[in-house]
Image (cartoon, rainbow, N blue to C red; front, side, top):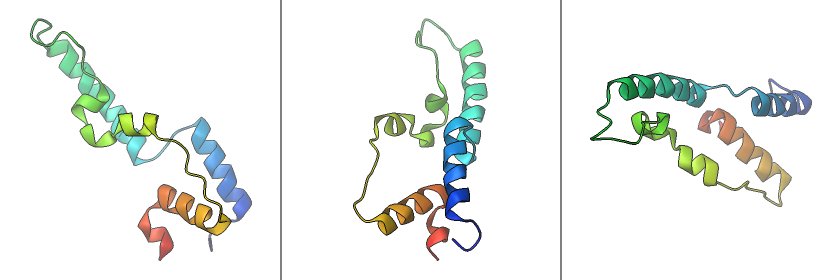
Amino acid sequence: MREVSSAEFTDWIAYSQIEHFGPQIDDLRAGVIAAAIYNVNRDSKKHPTPFGPSDVIPWLGLDEVKASQPILLDDPVAQSNLLRAALFGDRANG
């Protein structure tokens, strides 16, 4: 909160919805490449279903991200803290 204004923070949230960035997206990009290599070399009789990024990088948790619902809290400060923790991790609270 000391480094960015509320307006700038909101702009970054909006931008991240349009152009995804961060380490999780980097892992997804690497997973796409790894899955492509696996698929080129896989035995389609033993494994007929193609591999996807979540098959080679399981910590991505793509199913959890798709299935999750937005968390809306009544307290605006608690909502801001939740957003900050989700975007910047625990270090933002310190």
